[in-house]
Every structure is written in C-alpha cells, then in structure tokens.
Length: 505
Image (tube, rainbow, N blue to C red):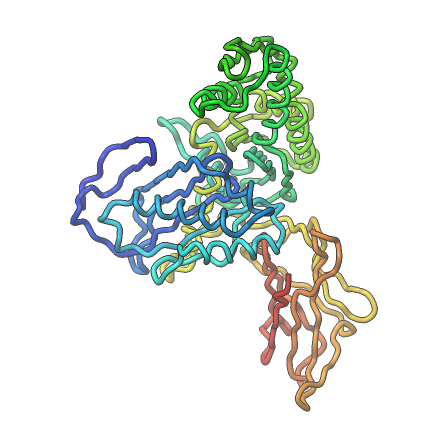
C-alpha cells in the first residue's frame, strides 16, 4: 500500500488520506457529488472510491473540497441558463480535475448532482442540457441519470455523522430517535423529518413531506444594503468610482456581521471608505439588524414549526439538526431553538459547524451513490440496504378510466424503498385499444403535478388482449423524484407488458 499523508490545507482544496506516491495506480470508479444550490461557493465533494466488482470498497475516505469564488449557479439558472451556467460548471470541473493527483487519473468518474426540491421538472431537464454543453462528460466521466434532492442528501450525511462513536463516547443518535433536519442555504431552505429504524446498517423512515422554500442567507443582502445606503446617505454622498479593494473591505465587514450577529444588544460598527462617506464609521443597532434578518428568518422558523407539528405524535427522543451555510448564523440557530422549545419538551438540538454544515449535501450525494453501488454488487448478500427505507410521497398517482381518475397513491402516503408497494386495479380501469390490427389491454397512468395541480400522463401500459384483466396489480417504486411501475397478476409479473413513459415536460 502507498503511504497515506497527513491532512493538508491550502486556499483551494483539502485532501485527506490521498495516496502520495506519484507511481501509484489503481482502477475503479470515483463518485463525485456536486451541490448546485450552494451559494457563494461550489462544493464538489469526492468521498471515496467504489472499487470494481469483486473488490472490497476501501474504508479510507478521500475528500476534496474545491472553493470557487464565482457567481452561484442558482442565481443565474432560471433567468439566463445557458452560457453562465455552462461556464460555471466547466470551471468547477476543470479546477476539480487539476486538483487531483496524477496517481488518480486512471479512475472513471460518476457525477451525482443534487438540486433543491423546488426545482421543477423543466428546470432539471435544462440542467442536464447545460451539463452536456459544459464538456464535462466523456468516455470515463458519466452523469448519474437522476438528480438527488438536497434535503435527502444532507440528511444522510448529517445522520451518519452523529451515529458514529466519537472519542470512545456513545453515538449521539440511536435507533428509534426522530431527527428533523433543517438545511439553510444561500437561496433555499429545506426541511424533513426521519425516524431512525436501524443503525447498522443505517435505515431511515421518512416521517414528513420534505418542504423547500425560496429563502436563504443571500436574500437578506438586499435588506442590508438598503439599510447601509440609508445610513451612508445621512453622512455623505457615494462617489461614482470606488476602488475594488475598498468595496471588498465593506463586503468583508458585512459578511462578518452576517455570520456573527446573534440578536443580542451588541452594536455593530461598519467602517466606510472615504469614497462612500468621508471615511466615517456607521453604527448599526441590534434592532436595526434584526429588521434585516427577520423577514427571512421568520419564514425559516415557520417552516420548522410546520415540520415539528406534522410529526408531533411520533416523537421519540427528538433531535433537530441545523445545517447549511446560513444555518451557521447564531441568530438563525437561536430563533430555530426557540421555536422548537415552544412545541417540544427537551429536544436535542445540534448545530453543524465549519465546513461540515456546508458540505453535507454533496457528501450525502456521494454516500448515497456509494451505497447504491454496494447494493448492486453481487456479493453484498443482503448486508446493506438503502439509507432511506421509506419515503413520504408528495404527488398523487392513479389511472385514468373515463370518466374520472382512480387514485392508487395519494399525496402524503408512505411508500417503501425496500419492499413492494402493490395496488389492486379494478377491471373497470382497463380498456382495450387496436393498433396495427392487434387488440391490446391498456391502462393510462397519470399523476397530479405539484407544479400546477393538473393531472399529467405518467405512462401507458399495454399487454395482449388474450391476457388477464382481473387480479391485476401495479407495483409502485418511488425514488423521491420519479415513479416507476410494474404490472403483476396474482403476485407474478405479467407477460407481454409494454410500458411507455411520457417524456414531455
């Protein structure tokens, strides 16, 4: 084995347990997680290697965090998606590859992308187009075909962090605990609750529908700049030209305030360059800053309250984890703690610190895909299971006889991720169709779109008319993004079935 070097830190990346010998070569697959919703900085996280089948996945962890001071992808995604987003991803990937050691160039790469839950289907499809235009993909760089929800990825990483023994102490989380995760980012905040059913292997049952709101730390900037502008105008006029270095000085002070304001009576001082206000200092009271924070933080607190109320009846050792870049704000943490304590007695509240808070989404994406790799291995022998063993569905699915819709799965229901989810079909929902002189049985499956609350086609299912029409079941497989169905007759897969999924937006 090659020698492992100690943790090294510099401006652009951090590496842990990376092979140091330049002649070191090994084949396999590297799984890369990219959190597109990260504001201010992009975090592709490399969290290990998936060895070829027949080899044991090594226990050591390699993590590289790349920081790029460029415009966040989410900020420009909807308005002008093409060039800026493509340039961002190209730069992100180029710097990431350059940061890898020569010893690792023999690997293939699987890229797992996470997105906020509020991104609609059309936006996700366009994101695939942008990734392809960025010239990232190649014969040895592959894109995992489905996006991963930010909150699920973050939940996996943060829960795994807390079930590990630390310094010979018992793990913080145990089987039976209920965990609510609130991931406060730059532009979005998401929350969901899980019950930990098993620890080894980790198995989490989702208790609430994941919720995502367009609220985050970056959205207080406009309020803050309006306050700063009012203060500056009271002491002087802003000149048209100001050196970038002095603008950076003000920006740095603002960011410091943003990450340290806790709501106490402490008065904050901002030193204003002479081009802004004659070199004076501006004093901001805690009350003034609270007015800047509260329009955003109030919405986050309401989201947390909504989640807690949704599962109050099944709380057993409630743990609340506050994560995300904006989740490091002492003021955000204080307000969330106050809201939870009003609803629950003696909860345990954990506030992620440092990079752990910001990288949870990307780390979780990689961890989930590594687990999927293990499950696909023929020698896993049932020792592993998906980290999330059941999910709460946020869309209703059914079949469309005429007239009306026969709903099979309703919004808010729990669907297993490890077992069958079978729904009996009444014969009346099965009709016949003729194509090329052939008569077939046909079912039109549909769903109730979360975007516009209109029923949309999911798929068309056909099989020969000579086949059965009674005792037919649909088995539903839901991965928190897409629904896949299979047709069964008396518990066995029906022969001759053809399923065509609708691919329109």
